[in-house]
Image (tube, rainbow, N blue to C red; front, side):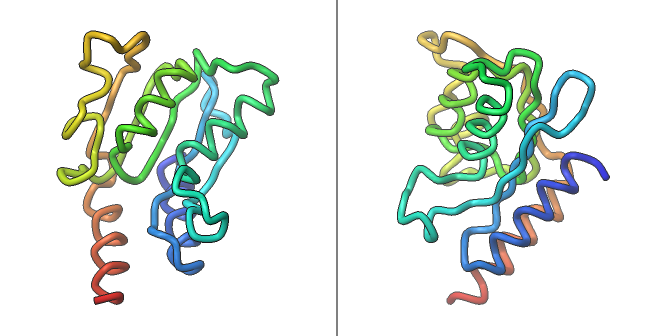
Amino acid sequence: MSPMEIALEEARAAARRGEVPVGAVVTDAAGQVLSRAGNEVEARHDPSAHAEILAMRAAAALRADKHLEDATLWVTLEPCAMCAQAASLFRVKRVVFGAYDPKSGGVEHGARVFAHRQCHHAPEVVGGVREAEAAALLREFFAARR
């Protein structure tokens, strides 16, 4: 199973728990999964409990290292500014995301954290991987709540 498929599984699981359906996976240089997570904002009563943050924290803890310099962060939605800054601080090598987020994104939209001159580390970015599927999960989730 590809890392993005695992991230999509995490997003589906998050939706079933009533969380915004975003999933994330961290892989090492060989493509092995180090960690995986879905949003847990509601469950933890913590607005910072985004899938990306949880997955990067778990991967760093597994390695007992604050940096993930050979790692790839796979996420179903363009990271927000908070998560993009965290990816920079964890020094991930690459960020791969699914759906673009014109409203709250922090990579290709909004703050464009990695393009900012004060960004200390800018990972390689690949957007739009399984975009339609990731975007559909979000549309369906929010449509059911309106």
